[in-house]
Image 1 (tube, rainbow, N blue to C red):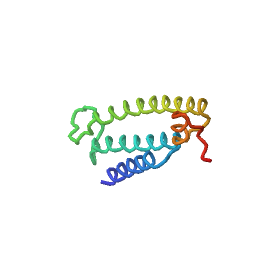
Image 2 (image 1 turned 90 degrees about the vertical axis):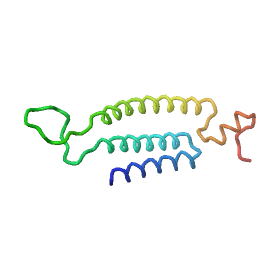
Image 3 (image 1 turned 135 degrees about the vertical axis):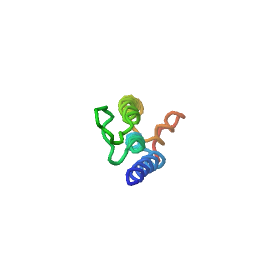
Image 4 (image 1 turned 45 degrees about the horizontal axis):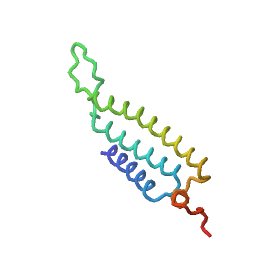
Length: 118
């Protein structure tokens, strides 16, 4: 039960950061935190207290842990890292083009304003 609470807390913190912050780097950090929470939630679904590795042996009558969530999370980690790297490359390009990573200023500049708060 504690794993579910931790996973939902990470997802909630990540969503809070994504919805409240205007800095694109902070938004990416929030997405990464939420991604970690989802991975923890998936691993928690496959957890079995007292379970053993899913390797068949003679005379083994213990319950086995489901390997499918583990495989899914490994795949999700790789995809998440690749997506985060691509998003960070886009943020770096935005910084080079507009000179800022603040979302409000970037939107103003895209609409034709100068992006200053004066």
